Length: 236
Image (tube, rainbow, N blue to C red; front, side, top):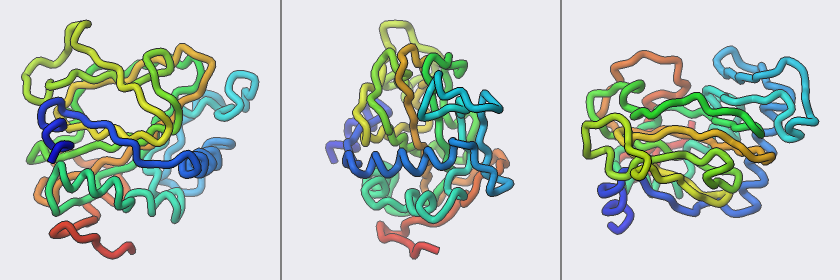
Protein backbone atom coordinates (compact mmCIF):
# COMPACT_ATOMS: atom_id res chain seq x y z
CA UNK A 1 0.00 0.00 0.00
CA UNK A 2 3.04 2.28 -0.02
CA UNK A 3 2.28 3.57 -3.54
CA UNK A 4 -1.31 4.34 -2.61
CA UNK A 5 -0.24 6.18 0.55
CA UNK A 6 2.14 8.40 -1.47
CA UNK A 7 -0.51 8.96 -4.12
CA UNK A 8 -3.15 9.94 -1.57
CA UNK A 9 -0.70 12.34 0.11
CA UNK A 10 0.84 14.00 -2.97
CA UNK A 11 -1.70 13.41 -5.75
CA UNK A 12 0.91 11.81 -8.00
CA UNK A 13 3.35 8.92 -8.15
CA UNK A 14 6.37 8.08 -10.37
CA UNK A 15 7.32 4.47 -11.18
CA UNK A 16 10.01 3.02 -13.49
CA UNK A 17 8.12 0.48 -15.61
CA UNK A 18 9.63 0.29 -19.11
CA UNK A 19 13.07 -0.98 -20.08
CA UNK A 20 15.52 0.78 -22.39
CA UNK A 21 14.63 -1.66 -25.19
CA UNK A 22 10.91 -1.05 -24.71
CA UNK A 23 11.41 2.70 -24.81
CA UNK A 24 13.36 2.36 -28.07
CA UNK A 25 10.47 0.37 -29.54
CA UNK A 26 7.94 2.97 -28.41
CA UNK A 27 10.00 5.75 -29.97
CA UNK A 28 10.12 3.82 -33.25
CA UNK A 29 6.33 3.48 -33.12
CA UNK A 30 6.01 7.20 -32.46
CA UNK A 31 8.38 8.11 -35.28
CA UNK A 32 6.13 6.25 -37.73
CA UNK A 33 3.23 8.49 -36.68
CA UNK A 34 5.02 11.82 -36.99
CA UNK A 35 7.52 11.52 -39.85
CA UNK A 36 5.51 12.24 -41.91
CA UNK A 37 2.34 12.91 -39.85
CA UNK A 38 0.05 9.88 -40.23
CA UNK A 39 -3.42 10.47 -41.71
CA UNK A 40 -4.69 6.88 -41.79
CA UNK A 41 -7.81 7.36 -39.67
CA UNK A 42 -10.27 10.29 -39.58
CA UNK A 43 -10.32 10.26 -35.75
CA UNK A 44 -6.55 9.99 -35.34
CA UNK A 45 -5.48 13.63 -35.17
CA UNK A 46 -1.78 14.47 -35.60
CA UNK A 47 -1.20 18.17 -34.91
CA UNK A 48 1.97 19.54 -36.53
CA UNK A 49 3.37 23.07 -36.41
CA UNK A 50 4.93 22.76 -39.88
CA UNK A 51 3.53 21.49 -43.16
CA UNK A 52 7.01 20.82 -44.54
CA UNK A 53 9.91 18.93 -42.92
CA UNK A 54 12.46 20.96 -40.98
CA UNK A 55 15.02 18.29 -40.01
CA UNK A 56 17.68 20.87 -39.15
CA UNK A 57 15.51 21.93 -36.19
CA UNK A 58 14.61 18.46 -34.90
CA UNK A 59 15.68 15.31 -36.79
CA UNK A 60 13.33 13.08 -34.76
CA UNK A 61 10.32 15.36 -35.23
CA UNK A 62 10.92 17.33 -38.45
CA UNK A 63 7.28 18.47 -38.78
CA UNK A 64 7.22 19.77 -35.18
CA UNK A 65 4.31 17.57 -34.17
CA UNK A 66 3.14 18.72 -30.73
CA UNK A 67 0.07 16.59 -30.07
CA UNK A 68 -1.53 13.34 -31.26
CA UNK A 69 -5.13 12.56 -30.27
CA UNK A 70 -6.59 9.03 -30.12
CA UNK A 71 -3.28 7.16 -30.36
CA UNK A 72 -4.97 3.73 -29.74
CA UNK A 73 -6.41 4.03 -33.28
CA UNK A 74 -2.90 4.06 -34.80
CA UNK A 75 -2.62 0.25 -34.91
CA UNK A 76 -2.55 -2.98 -32.92
CA UNK A 77 0.63 -2.09 -31.03
CA UNK A 78 -0.88 1.19 -29.91
CA UNK A 79 -4.12 -0.48 -28.87
CA UNK A 80 -2.18 -3.10 -26.88
CA UNK A 81 -0.45 -0.35 -24.88
CA UNK A 82 -3.66 0.60 -23.06
CA UNK A 83 -3.84 -2.97 -21.71
CA UNK A 84 -0.29 -3.02 -20.27
CA UNK A 85 -0.61 -5.04 -17.06
CA UNK A 86 2.19 -3.18 -15.27
CA UNK A 87 0.35 0.11 -15.70
CA UNK A 88 -3.02 -1.43 -14.84
CA UNK A 89 -1.56 -2.99 -11.69
CA UNK A 90 -0.64 0.47 -10.41
CA UNK A 91 -3.93 2.02 -11.56
CA UNK A 92 -5.80 -0.82 -9.83
CA UNK A 93 -3.97 -0.09 -6.58
CA UNK A 94 -4.96 3.57 -6.86
CA UNK A 95 -8.53 3.28 -8.18
CA UNK A 96 -9.69 -0.19 -7.20
CA UNK A 97 -10.37 -3.44 -9.05
CA UNK A 98 -12.87 -2.20 -11.68
CA UNK A 99 -11.13 -0.09 -14.33
CA UNK A 100 -12.29 1.46 -17.61
CA UNK A 101 -10.24 3.26 -20.25
CA UNK A 102 -10.91 6.94 -20.89
CA UNK A 103 -8.66 8.26 -23.66
CA UNK A 104 -5.18 8.09 -25.18
CA UNK A 105 -2.96 10.72 -26.75
CA UNK A 106 0.64 11.94 -26.97
CA UNK A 107 2.29 15.23 -26.06
CA UNK A 108 5.52 16.19 -27.80
CA UNK A 109 7.85 19.07 -27.09
CA UNK A 110 10.13 19.74 -30.06
CA UNK A 111 13.32 21.61 -29.24
CA UNK A 112 12.67 25.22 -28.18
CA UNK A 113 8.87 24.86 -28.41
CA UNK A 114 7.22 27.08 -25.81
CA UNK A 115 4.52 25.51 -23.64
CA UNK A 116 1.28 27.50 -23.65
CA UNK A 117 -0.68 25.25 -21.29
CA UNK A 118 -1.63 26.85 -17.98
CA UNK A 119 -2.25 25.40 -14.53
CA UNK A 120 -5.23 23.06 -14.54
CA UNK A 121 -6.90 19.97 -13.12
CA UNK A 122 -7.83 17.24 -15.60
CA UNK A 123 -11.28 16.95 -14.06
CA UNK A 124 -11.96 20.58 -15.02
CA UNK A 125 -11.97 19.64 -18.71
CA UNK A 126 -12.82 15.92 -18.55
CA UNK A 127 -15.81 16.31 -16.24
CA UNK A 128 -17.09 13.12 -14.57
CA UNK A 129 -19.52 12.18 -11.83
CA UNK A 130 -16.67 11.15 -9.50
CA UNK A 131 -13.03 12.27 -9.13
CA UNK A 132 -11.84 8.74 -9.83
CA UNK A 133 -9.51 9.13 -12.81
CA UNK A 134 -5.78 8.55 -13.09
CA UNK A 135 -3.60 9.70 -15.97
CA UNK A 136 -0.51 7.61 -16.80
CA UNK A 137 2.20 9.64 -18.56
CA UNK A 138 4.92 7.45 -20.10
CA UNK A 139 8.13 9.43 -20.60
CA UNK A 140 10.24 8.44 -23.61
CA UNK A 141 13.07 10.89 -22.90
CA UNK A 142 14.99 12.24 -19.93
CA UNK A 143 12.88 14.84 -18.20
CA UNK A 144 14.26 17.74 -16.20
CA UNK A 145 13.34 21.35 -15.50
CA UNK A 146 14.93 22.56 -18.75
CA UNK A 147 13.57 19.94 -21.17
CA UNK A 148 9.87 20.51 -20.56
CA UNK A 149 9.18 18.54 -17.40
CA UNK A 150 5.65 18.21 -16.11
CA UNK A 151 5.15 20.66 -13.25
CA UNK A 152 2.96 19.52 -10.35
CA UNK A 153 1.62 21.02 -7.14
CA UNK A 154 1.91 18.26 -4.52
CA UNK A 155 -1.18 17.85 -2.36
CA UNK A 156 -3.31 20.15 -4.52
CA UNK A 157 -5.87 17.38 -5.07
CA UNK A 158 -6.87 18.03 -1.44
CA UNK A 159 -7.14 21.82 -1.83
CA UNK A 160 -9.51 24.29 -3.50
CA UNK A 161 -6.96 26.81 -4.80
CA UNK A 162 -6.28 26.68 -8.53
CA UNK A 163 -2.69 27.97 -8.83
CA UNK A 164 0.40 27.36 -6.68
CA UNK A 165 2.96 29.76 -5.33
CA UNK A 166 6.38 29.50 -6.95
CA UNK A 167 7.90 27.62 -4.02
CA UNK A 168 5.12 24.98 -4.13
CA UNK A 169 5.88 23.80 -7.69
CA UNK A 170 7.77 20.54 -8.28
CA UNK A 171 9.16 19.54 -11.72
CA UNK A 172 8.79 15.81 -12.30
CA UNK A 173 12.28 14.57 -13.12
CA UNK A 174 12.18 11.16 -14.79
CA UNK A 175 14.22 8.83 -16.95
CA UNK A 176 13.01 7.27 -20.22
CA UNK A 177 10.56 4.52 -19.25
CA UNK A 178 9.29 6.23 -16.12
CA UNK A 179 5.53 6.65 -15.70
CA UNK A 180 3.86 9.51 -13.85
CA UNK A 181 0.49 8.54 -12.35
CA UNK A 182 -1.50 11.73 -11.81
CA UNK A 183 -4.71 12.23 -9.82
CA UNK A 184 -7.41 14.02 -11.83
CA UNK A 185 -7.62 16.79 -9.18
CA UNK A 186 -3.87 17.46 -8.96
CA UNK A 187 -2.97 20.90 -10.31
CA UNK A 188 -0.27 20.63 -12.99
CA UNK A 189 0.98 22.04 -16.25
CA UNK A 190 3.52 21.48 -19.00
CA UNK A 191 6.72 23.51 -19.13
CA UNK A 192 8.74 24.74 -22.10
CA UNK A 193 11.58 22.76 -23.63
CA UNK A 194 14.52 25.18 -23.62
CA UNK A 195 17.10 22.58 -24.71
CA UNK A 196 18.21 21.20 -28.09
CA UNK A 197 16.70 17.81 -27.13
CA UNK A 198 13.32 16.48 -28.19
CA UNK A 199 10.97 15.08 -25.56
CA UNK A 200 7.90 12.86 -25.97
CA UNK A 201 5.19 11.61 -23.60
CA UNK A 202 2.56 8.95 -24.26
CA UNK A 203 -0.56 9.55 -22.18
CA UNK A 204 -3.35 7.16 -21.21
CA UNK A 205 -6.23 8.11 -18.94
CA UNK A 206 -8.06 5.51 -16.84
CA UNK A 207 -11.06 5.71 -14.53
CA UNK A 208 -13.07 3.62 -12.14
CA UNK A 209 -15.91 1.72 -13.79
CA UNK A 210 -18.48 3.58 -11.68
CA UNK A 211 -17.54 7.09 -12.79
CA UNK A 212 -19.51 8.50 -15.73
CA UNK A 213 -18.32 11.18 -18.13
CA UNK A 214 -20.36 14.38 -18.31
CA UNK A 215 -18.40 16.08 -21.12
CA UNK A 216 -18.95 14.57 -24.59
CA UNK A 217 -15.75 14.04 -26.58
CA UNK A 218 -14.32 12.05 -29.47
CA UNK A 219 -12.22 9.71 -27.30
CA UNK A 220 -11.58 6.39 -29.02
CA UNK A 221 -12.36 3.38 -26.80
CA UNK A 222 -13.82 5.60 -24.07
CA UNK A 223 -15.39 3.50 -21.28
CA UNK A 224 -13.73 0.33 -22.61
CA UNK A 225 -13.76 -2.19 -19.69
CA UNK A 226 -10.19 -3.22 -18.82
CA UNK A 227 -10.54 -4.95 -15.44
CA UNK A 228 -13.36 -6.29 -13.36
CA UNK A 229 -12.69 -7.58 -9.86
CA UNK A 230 -9.00 -6.99 -10.51
CA UNK A 231 -8.99 -9.44 -13.42
CA UNK A 232 -8.20 -8.42 -17.02
CA UNK A 233 -11.00 -8.26 -19.53
CA UNK A 234 -10.37 -10.02 -22.87
CA UNK A 235 -8.49 -7.91 -25.42
CA UNK A 236 -10.81 -7.34 -28.41
